Structure formats: structure tokens, C-alpha cells
Image (cartoon, rainbow, N blue to C red; front, side, top):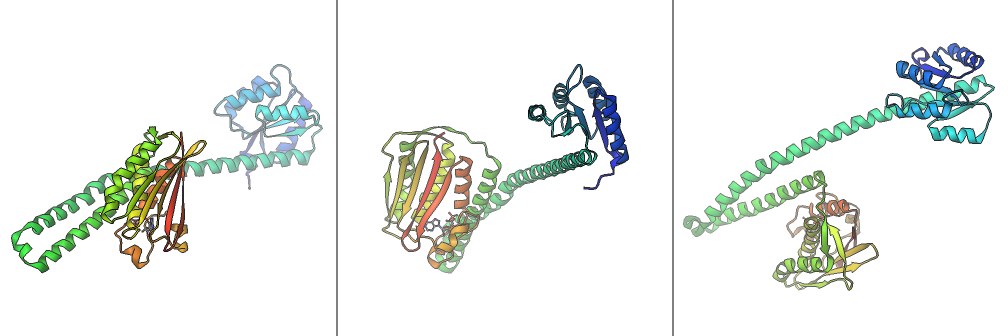
Length: 375
Ligand code: ADP
């Protein structure tokens, strides 16, 4: 990094005038602006007034010694980031360790070696400058995240109305048309109306899933509550039973053998399970089998949703949990879907510090395994 040294100020603190003179001579030759102090308390006063870029601080001084001065400087917010290099009489390890503990970034030893002093000083100035730049970038990044979040929240707010309302209107009138005797008499027109209804349902599902995903990613505060694990699994199984029976699929629940209470956002984890079981039913042909298995580990629980349905090809696995990813085989695409369900599931599981894995074989079936910490 290229410094204009004349704009860089160094505060030299030493009780020995000869040392000060030596250091000042070196530094002035390098065009640094130099301030000096012979006591700890004067050093703090000058530092507060001049806000130097770096401080060279002697350890052994009457009154406040170097460590005390260093600790005091680090406590003052405006000075806390200024790098401090200790001046140590000897290469004494204890001195050096105590210096680092007090907040110093480096040390130089007496008698001063001209090139070493300048090299160490410049290294610390470069590091401090880089740190400042990183912090500035971080702050900028944080700002842009915040404005993205605001935009996202605004979008969710307006899209909820602007996208959903017209769909309600279309679907409402399509339903009225469907029931109109004149239309019911004309098979072709009735077919058109039914196509409108199917299109609207598809669009509503998509809008609903997109808004859901955006909202879930924005509102990460979980409403955790104690939930009896076995009861929870049974409940979800019962809720999904009618969907399975529509396709004559057997839905079997294997609750855990041990009792366990888990602390989760029951609504969100309920949605995880509903999504996985509904996928298992959707992508399993008629007369198939779906199982929900609960297992209790040491500090976590496992939920497996197993089916003997279509399975998933290997090449789809790396992106399976990303939004809008669907398996493009004819059999998979025959089922209505948005490709958002699994990304919603993954978001919810990760919000609980859990993990989701899939073990699957095309044509044989799939097992989605969710692991959740109990707390
Ligand atoms: P979708 O709304 O399309 O069901 P998901 O995100 O839930 O979206 O799933 C992504 C894709 O993963 C699905 O389109 C489907 O191809 C595949 N998939 C998900 N679950 C299963 C499963 N149990 N068996 C076979 N394929 C599945």
C-alpha cells in the first residue's frame, strides 16, 4: 500500500528523551508527522487531540506504565482501533506477552534498528488500513442487505394483494360461469371454463409458494414451543391420510419407541412434514406405500418420509433443494408442481439448525431424512 507519509501521524511515548530523539529522527526522515509524550497520561491527552494513525509506546515509564496506558487507550472508543507497538528494553517474552494481552499489535526492541522500526510500523499501518477498508465494505454490504430486505418486504406486501386479488376474481367468475346453465349445455365452452380454472389453480399455487418462500426467508423468528414428538408425527400422518387414500396408497406411521419433547416452531415443522408426505404421495403411483418414521437420538430427532414411488435420478440431486427445480421426466411432470416445495422445506429445517438429506433410486423410491436438534 502506498502511503503519503506526511499525512500519517505517529505518537511516540517514551520517558527517555534520547529514545524519543532517536525515533523522531528516524520517522521524520520518512516524512511522518510525529507527536511525542513522556508520560502515559500526557500520551492519552495527545492521542485524544491528535488521533494518531499509530502509537509507539514504551513499557517502562514512571507513573502509568506502558501496559496501563495501552489498556486505557483501548478503552476510549475513538482511540481503540489505533495500532499500538510496544517498545521493549529486552527481548523478554513475558514483557511481549503482557503487551499483546494489553492490546498491542507488535513490539520493537531497544537498541532500535532503524530498518526494523520502519518495517514494523509500515506493516501495522498497512494492516490497519486494510482493516478499515474491510470494515467499510462490510458496512456497505450490510446496508445493501438491509435495503434488499426492505424491498423484499415491500414486494411481499404489495404482491400479496396485487397478484392474489386478480386470481380470486378470475377464479370466482370461472366458478360462476361453470354453474351457468347455458355454459353447462355447451361441452366445448365448459371445457374452456375448466381450462381457465386449472390455469388459475396452477397460478395461485405458484404465487402462494413464491410469496411463502420470500416471507419465510425474511421472517426468521421462530415461535418455538415444546412438542411431544410421537403425537406430532401421528397428527401429521392422520392429517395426510385422506390424500393417500385418494390414490389407494397405504400411509403407515412408525412413531419413535422412546418419548421425546422437541422445541420447535410446530407450524413450520408441520409444513416440512406435510410437504414431504404430500410429495411422497404425489410422486408414488396408485397402490404404493408411504411411511413416516420417527427416531429419537441423543440430542436430536430424525424423521424419515419413505416411499416406493418414482424415485429421483442422480443428476437431479445436486439442485433438488433449489427453487424451481423439478425432475423433467414425463412421469414426474405429469404431477402438478411448482418446484418450490423442497426449497421451502430446506429453509424451514435450516432455520431450526437441522439438516435434510435424501436417499433415492429412480424407479424404486425415495427416503427424505430430516434431523432436528431437540432444543
Ligand atoms: P413440486 O412442487 O414440483 O413437487 P418440490 O420442490 O416439492 O416441487 O420438489 C421438487 C421436485 O423433486 C419435484 O418436482 C419432483 O420431481 C421431485 N420430488 C420431490 N419429492 C419426490 C419424491 N418423494 N419422489 C420422487 N420425486 C420427488
